Length: 407
Image (cartoon, rainbow, N blue to C red; front, side, top):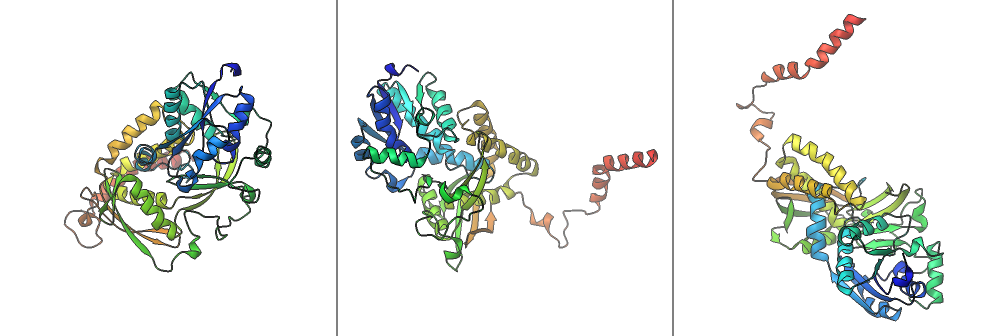
C-alpha cells in the first residue's frame, strides 16, 4: 500500500479503546488524512451516546451512525436461528454482527470516495477476518488498514498510555479493562482474570453482568413465556405481534431477569489459538430453545438429523467470516426449505438460569398421539416390528455368522 495515496479513510468506529486511539494514529501515520468515522448501530444502546462529539474531538471530520438494528436481526440473526447455528455452543453474537456492519462501512466508503477502510481488530482475533472478507465481497479493490498489524503498541495497557498521552477520554480504566463487545443479541467479556480458565467469572460482582443477573440472584418464582413462530421466524410473544427488534429486546429483558443465557467458553479461534470468553445472550438462548423445541414436532427424522449437520457447517462459516459466500447462501436456501412447516407456539419456563420446555403446538405437527400412545390403539400393529428388526438387523446377523465360521 502506498501511504502517500491515502487521503481519505473510513474508520469502523465504536468509541472503545482501540478505535479511540486510531483516529489520531491514522492522522500521524497517513499524512494527516481525512478520517470519516462510521458506527454501525446494532443495538449497543448507551455506548453510542456522545460518540459524535468524541470522534470529532479526536480528529474525525464527521461521524455516520448507521441504524442497522432491523437489518441485523432480520437478515443475519434470523437466518442463523432458523439454521440452529451455534459454534461450539456459542450463539454467534459477534460473528454475525460483523458482516452487517462491514457492509454498511463499504456503503459509506464508496459514497465518500474513500481510499481505504480501517478497522481496530487485533491480529490475534477472528474479527479482522470477518471484516476484511466482508469488505472484499463488496469492494474487492479497497485498501484495508489494520493498525494492530502496523503499530508498535503491544497491549491494552499501552493503548491506554497512548490515549492518556494524547488526552483522549476513555470510559474504562486499567482495572475494568475487559475487552467487551455489545449488541442487540449479546455481550461478550474477554481479558483480565478471564484469561485464566481456572478463574470463575465474577458474575455477582456489581457491574460485571450488564444484560443478565447471576442465576442465584434471579427470582425464586418461575416466569412463563409463549413464543409464536411462522416458517421458523419468531413473530409474537404471549400472543402479541412484535417486530424483530422488539422481540429480541423483550426476550433479553425476560431472560436477563431470570439469569438466562450465560456461557463461559474456551473456544477454538479461526487463527488457531484457544480463547476464553464469557457471553451474555439471554434472549438468544430463549429463542434457540424455543425454535429447537418446535422443530422436534414439525420436521421429519431425516430432515431434522441432516439439518443438524448443516447447522454445524453453517455456524463455522459464520464464525470464520464467510457470510457473503456461495456456500452460506446455498445452506440458507436449504434451511429456508426446511422451515416451511416450522410454525406454531412454544411455551417455556424460565427459572434461575434454566430454560425448560412447558408445551409446544403446531398445525403442522408430525406427532400423532394415537401412534405414540402406550395405551391400546388401533393404528399401530406391534407385530410389524419383528419383520422390520429382522431386515434392519440383517447386516449384523450376516457378519456375525461369517465371524463364527472363521473361528
